[in-house]
Length: 612
Ligand code: PTT
Ligand code: SF4
Image 1: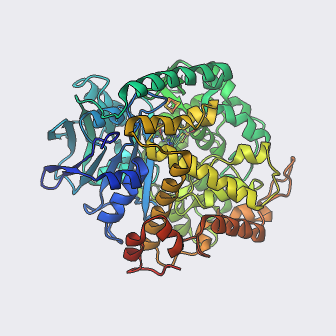
Image 2 (image 1 turned 30 degrees about the vertical axis):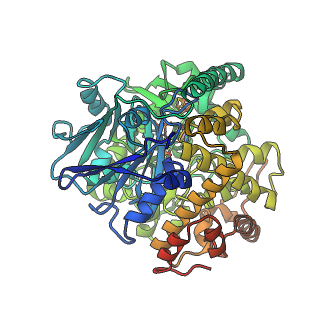
Image 3 (image 1 turned 180 degrees about the vertical axis):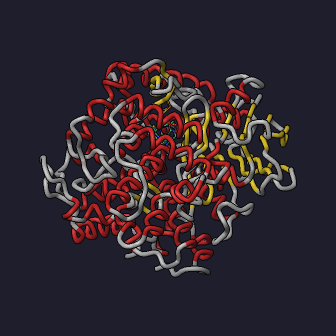
């Protein structure tokens, strides 16, 4: 089997043992890698109902057949576990040297099970696995932990680590890597923390197996050059992801004041142009020629790396329009290891709830200083407020009672990213049906919707576009595993990816083959969901109620008075289910599951829930 190392490293923290396990070519071709491997492994190995923060949960780090190989933007890894935030499968994707180092060490995936008795650093070097003490950095932030690790290992080493938020099991804590990389929004950092696993350090000395290595080298290097050319021509990385902020503000799609408003006259102060002006350095993931990580100096003088989602949620969503202050809030999230999107949503929701009288407190929209203090309380789970806010918006809304949950900007427990969709139905659907909860990664339909389609439409074309994007973004790129930005941002052709895959594996796949594997991975995640929530309904695929609430419509501007329409949303959802072959609850039918070759998994789910 070429293209895959053919091995998974299984580590048990409880008894400090490890095993090198092989997998079959059938497994490799069926699940490809990344999210596919993680979803299948966790489905097979986790019993439904287990405590996500208990030793029964497992952390999976999974790579794909092109991870770590010099080719456009392959320095990425998928991290996954049962999410403590959403209660079912959750994952994230981050730039890290782990992508190449774990594969050079001879593994396509790492499974971490059990829990350590003391703070631990897991050290992996080929066939050497060590359980080292991390007591010296337990209680410390991710920046100090990184420095501590890099003082002992070269910068090319693969490093994953957590901050205080992960240690204290904040339900939306992330895993961090390198200078400014982060992933695992649904609390995958808390899973590491619950295992007293402070860091994973990986070095490998082998060659990643490739069927046609010379061909791969040529097309990979060509690809890297092409991605750089396309980026330079388009000028995208000048403002990087934040290029979208001014546009979102213009089209009434910006999250302002806990997504109550969709635009703000001061938004320009935190837009891509201002970000580029304030730039002090640029960072990126390994194997990337279009580095998009822009850092600025924050209010306290720290270097803080900002992306659009971070700015949108920690800036306008909490009415903070001072870029340096947004930088400070972002720096603290990075250091504590809090997800910036959920953190911004939590702060916005808290200020909103105080304003509406749902709870009491002294935090107001626009108060960046108090916001910073709150982030510390959250990361330490300090006091009643810190402890509640550490649990995310859904639990906060439930605790405050009455109709508070309606204002929690989340889907399936995961806070939504920085797109305010009360007048953007397709993107609202994309959030509603994102398999792990309110993530924009799966289908970012907003630009298609506003530039090439009819904004008001709830028609089948919107459902079709969501599926097309899910197959590419949540499928192809999460399975292979590579960064999607060369394709999505600068137009690097999708057809290149099967070429890479075929060169490393010797297979002859087309994009169509990837769509089938993508659909299988999505169906698998739905099976995780149904097994954990046997009473799942289509309401679970709805965005927050407030987006349908006339009283919450914009009071001025081009989208004045517009909110989502319940009946029309529901029929668009039905188009999505029909086109995907899902039943009325949004669950794949037995017929579809058989077509995707996952009857065995379906039978397992039927022990707990009904399939149609
Ligand atoms: C992703 C989510 C995003 S998506 C952002 S900004 W974005 C936030 N980044 C955070 C951060 O930073 N620090 C922090 N403490 N929390 C953060 N939470 C938020 O997490 C990221 C880039 C970006 S920048 C995006 S869109 C693309 N995402 C990709 C993806 O998901 N898959 C893929 N194959 N390629 C991608 N390329 C792009 O990578 P989650 P990164 Mg992130 C600091 O993980 O859980 O999926 O949530 O990975 O290495 O930092 O690169 O406008
Ligand atoms: Fe990382 Fe940005 Fe390059 Fe993607 S484009 S690999 S997110 S630096």
